[in-house]
Image (cartoon, rainbow, N blue to C red; front, side):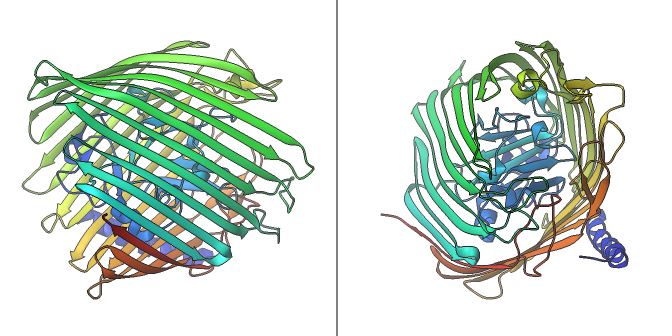
Length: 617
């Protein structure tokens, strides 16, 4: 734990370092000027022309750190925090720009994998293994115009394909270490002139540690996850694609109030898939994507006393996306979607449906300037209609390497099935939560683009917040709005051909409708990273996560301060050849004792050894 004096000194020094770089750097970590991103417009777009804030984690970085869970990588990005209730497999809340997971849309290969049976709709990040993922895109700001409900804070898009080399390739990854942890992954990929495919199978097991901070009994976890994706061009104007996710996790937990050692346990299973076709009309001027997707979840929770609760969720969705090139300067993207959600639990057996249509214009009158404007209307089977809009802009001064970017838009979150229909608590008269979000920033490049910095101010206001008032769920309007304000500053620096540096600082001020500070969000969040290649075949990487000034507590209750912490991880790797790697990885090297959720434990010092290999038949 850092003392108040040391915290102030450290914060001043780290902030000065990062902001100093920023006045010399990254909205997007380590991407080149011509990198294409999909999430901001739902079609391939050059990163340098995107007005919204978007960040990318590539496969190379995932392999470079070899951390087991997707949340481990998201937790290093500016403006993002993860709050797990214990170890892997436990409830984990993603917080983006001060807003919780129910305000974030999570996609896997275009599939909405958020679970619909909980009090709010959000993805089960505690179960998502990273070795199955090839790329992570994070889009920030109100994005309901393109993505509908739940995208108030932004979108996380996980993909498996992209950049697959020609031919067939096998890859194997195994790791073992502290807390009797074992991990294994096998992947098969293939790239050819008419398409590509990928199949991946991962297994993870650990004896873990006590979920309860006061506990002494280890709580273990096992996970088996399979993914597949493929795309095949049947002709120059037609391609078909398919993707899927099969996940099975089993978790030992603790329960009680306050939480304490117990034989409680839980399971989580998810099967999700998407199939569709892409086709072009009018000599390629109109590109179309038509798809259908499904996500089926089954969650079971057994308390320490032996009582068991089951939660079954199902989502079907139809989606159409069109992109029409009016002229070289103007492209119109448009689409429509419809989905049905069903939750079956001990207390709820209900369904809702929603559908909407949208249009988004992308106008670039000259190369340096790109503007977008869009509008969407949705209809919900319970609360009726809602309209949202969004506008973005990006302008680059090529001579100085300076780019200004900004976005503004509205969003909404439909009430969950639990909020609508739970006995005693549910309220079918609920309206959606609505939001207004804005950000503006400047990206600066130096040294032939080897040094990239970005500083962005953001704000989001959420109205008609859904909460208890006084017993049932209500749209709380009398006490004000949920508000977040903050600054994200980051840099990426390819200092030499053997040293890469990166870092980020985020200041977040988030308040609830009653004016109380939002819990589990560090006011000051710092992430630092370095990769060193001291000799041929050797690589050393290290990351540091510093969280300062965090509070926790219960709804309408007093707040208490959580300890500040510095979480330091490092990895040393040796490559006997270009297709084989041996490594040693350390977690929490300072053996920090800290909490991110009051009363719940976090992992201590750990050491892990691993092996990777790629080979062609």
